[in-house]
Image 1 (tube, rainbow, N blue to C red):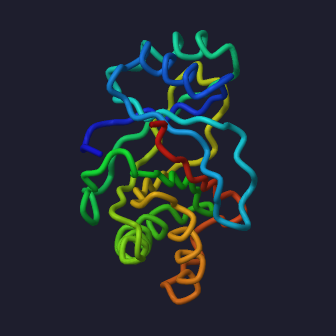
Image 2 (image 1 turned 90 degrees about the vertical axis):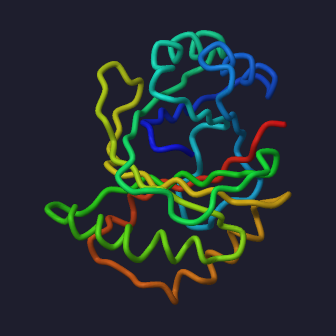
Length: 197
């Protein structure tokens, strides 16, 4: 993950091959993922089975990606607000992602940002299997297919053949981590995706 803007594209497709071809039409070198079998417990089930992470220069290609999949897809753009925390993994084949979309309670954005940057992301990246994380702010774009209610994104990378052990370790560790009352917990959207190989 570099320090430029990113576009998360969530969508559905008939197969991994169809999704990969659609992503190639938008940005050939973009990482593409499918929903992992294991997920964190307690969150709303994921609406979309596929994810691509594009650079901001690929924005014009998102429409083509939607058209090629033949299904609903939505794209949201984010700008980084922190440097990378942790170490970026080198093995792209076993590099799962856990995008976590959040929103603060009214008037608590500064508190949420402080907690996430100085406590939560550093603590999560100390859990075995979590290589790194970076925080982003939403950039509101016209013509997205779904309105984005989440104002912040934490994008974590998980290493290993299977992300599920790391997800279970995170669940076990959460109770011992620094907490905040600025986060609107019921609105968290956190789903794990695995690379399409």
